[in-house]
Image 1 (cartoon, rainbow, N blue to C red):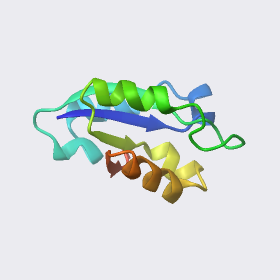
Image 2 (tube, rainbow, N blue to C red):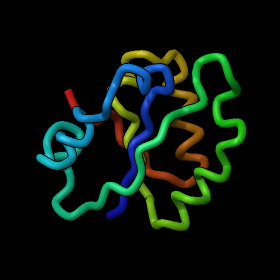
Image 3 (cartoon, rainbow, N blue to C red):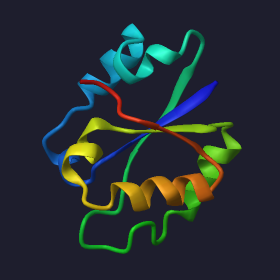
Image 4 (tube, helix red, strand yellow):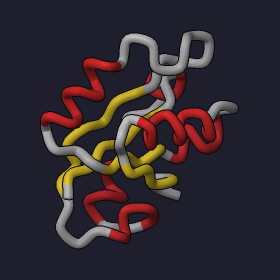
Length: 104
């Protein structure tokens, strides 16, 4: 299985991603469902004040070409984003399986 992690744009200025990567490496929290998975992508949304996925088609194409089929919506999106449900539905409409969370 090949997965990616979608993180909150505004949090990328303060966050190194260590929590997500460490949880994946240790197969804990939201990543405990995997035994044999590869983390291929770590990317952010467009931000709070921009159209949700405007201009992101290229990113989605890259993910699909690389075989990414599952996207985790990182903990920061769950905590910070008022558009969580809209993001989840959009990703599912693009053909991705969506998993809630990354690390605790």
